[in-house]
Image (cartoon, rainbow, N blue to C red; front, side):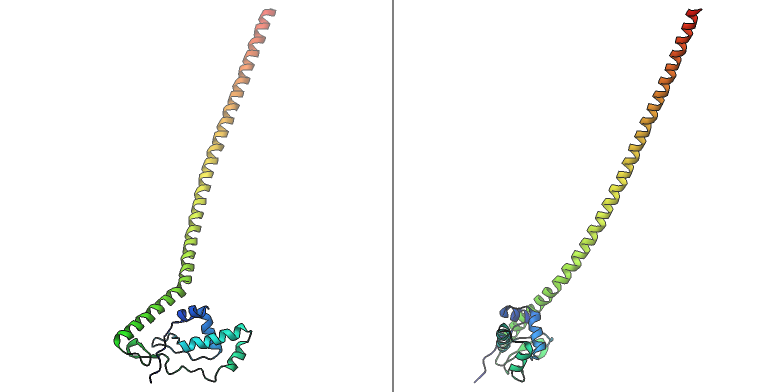
Length: 199
């Protein structure tokens, strides 16, 4: 009797099913020495059995059992079951009992799509940081440029204002001098007329 074909999951799919982040699954794999199958490209492929193991780990962790104790409770070798995924030729992935090129291609496309999604998700943070860094640099440069322009415009305005004030003060001084001269002239005439009358 054939063993039932197990479904295969990428790390993001498995993490979503387990309701954890992908790095948690990688951490458990490393800490607990789990043997997770990989495809021909070296990407992790999780089976239903792997998910059962992860659910057991999750349950034990929920009961406050340390990873060291969990490692002791796991079977000596968490080797992949015979129905796990194995690399096949030309980049396809096969499971025992799977047949037909159409099934293999559909599975390969699904795995490839998920790998691309994972890569894009992992790189989106780095890309957004890079973009925001560039944008903030450009905004900072633009603000510096606008501030410099404003300072130059203010300096020109203050020079013009200063020049206007000086011109106004000079005109007032000249008017005052003219008035003083005029007053002196009137006083002179007044005294001259008085002298003439006195004679």
